[in-house]
Amino acid sequence: MYRFVLHTVVLGVLLLPLRSSARCVGEKELIKLQNRLQRRYWERLNVPQPTSPQQRAPTCAQVSKELHEDTQSRSLSPWRYRLDRNDSRFPHEIYVAECLCAGCIINRHEDHSYNSREVFSHPMVLWKTSCPGDPSKYAVRKKFIRVAVGCTCVRPVVRHAM
Ligand SMILES: *[C@@H]1O[C@H](CO)[C@@H](O)[C@H](O)[C@H]1NC(C)=O
Image (cartoon, rainbow, N blue to C red; front, top):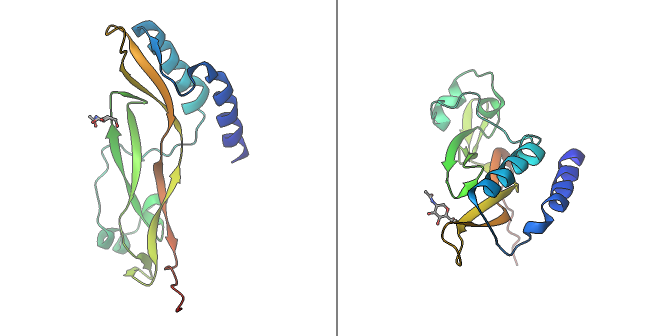
């Protein structure tokens, strides 16, 4: 966790020239910025990747009955990964966790007295749009996005009687 925070801070300083206002860059400079973000940030982030990209999409009932090796299926709140692709964003491909159950798997059955909830990370990405003043260039902005990285089992919200 400390390492993650440190990298986030270090990268924030390294990418300072980008700020929130967009900067127009050519194709070469865009690739440089993307490579830099990849090397100095994304490669060091502990962003979960699916065990196999072509994984099946099991249902809650299926994972609750079967025996599995991987954490995402053995969790009381199992999840799968959906590939999110957008070519205007860098990285273009990000895996997003989706909870398989509404409740949690207790003793091999889905128990609805608990709830599965996503756990989020907020990594930095680059967004490109065409440059208003020069269509041959790109306007590049850095942005923090919210990405579900797994699921956890929570107790239901208790509503107190007034
Ligand atoms: C990529 O993201 C932009 C901004 O959120 C959105 O407008 C666009 O529809 C997305 N493209 C795809 C292919 O999802």
